[in-house]
Image 1 (cartoon, rainbow, N blue to C red):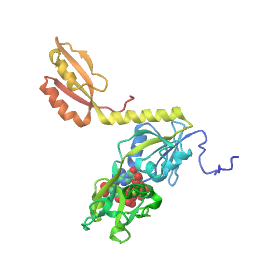
Image 2: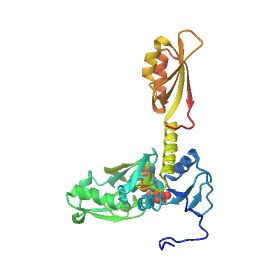
Image 3: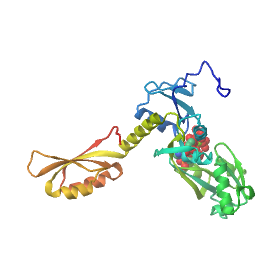
Image 4: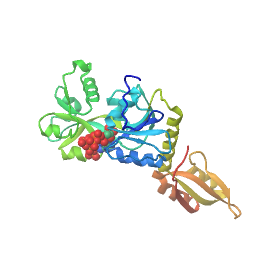
Length: 306
Ligand SMILES: Nc1ncnc2c1ncn2[C@@H]1O[C@H](COP(=O)(O)OP(=O)(O)OP(=O)(O)O)[C@@H](O)[C@H]1O
Ligand SMILES: O=P(O)(O)OC[C@H]1O[C@H](OP(=O)(O)OP(=O)(O)O)[C@H](O)[C@@H]1O
Ligand SMILES: [Mg+2]
């Protein structure tokens, strides 16, 4: 037996399965679970168990703290994972993990923040040489070393780690500034802070080890996720239009590849079926109407393969 492998009879046998890590709690948890359901992954997680066997694919889900997932994937203990871009950068694993896809949720910014009441601090440079508290120690040191124009070892700014509720550090007198994630800004403002610099824009990503053990299965998951993201982004739009207006209508709705055009049982008219981005849908429908389209219908896309 390999010395590094420890066997516990109460753990499920995952030896022939691709290990897929998802955050066990926190901001990414709900959206990850909904994504797993949408891509057809079926599993039954027992209370207190962090490993769940997938019943319809040779996969075991491993529920881990989001902050550790990139490290496990980089080291090859886990094959596939979902975590934040911020965590990949902070754990300095970008060279050892392959980013398969950005997932469009968990979007926020890692920002340098200072007490809004202290008028002397308007810029991150005003915090150089001062005390900074953060959970993102590496990214923070890199940013301040950059601001100081020296290597990290020579920087004068003091960077200290705390594991959570970072926003409390200035009010409690531990820090002059902090570096933490901001989404709505509510937490920052509630703590009397304001942002003076952005270190990173982040969102959740699907990652694999650069030498995956199950490349075909990982690619199947990637394709399924891509299909779901597309289904969330587009709707199917159908309308009727006179042939004379078709060129203009197709310019308004070019589709992802091209519109599908079928003839109607009415001389000189066609039916068009085309994918339209949800974010521009209302505007597109107005334009189609002005171009002479009738019976404009919008259908949700439940799933897709692209
Ligand atoms: N407010 C937020 N909005 C969007 N994404 C966020 C937010 N906070 C964190 N994230 C993303 O989620 C990742 C995990 O952070 P999260 O706060 O969920 O973990 P945690 O601190 O371990 O959990 P918890 O807050 O429950 O203790 C972050 O690295 C970031 O990518
Ligand atoms: O800009 P907002 O929308 O207010 O979101 C930002 C907050 O969200 C995260 O904290 P979380 O709620 O995960 O708590 P934590 O600090 O205990 O991790 C992050 O660390 C910020 O505190
Ligand atoms: Mg958190």
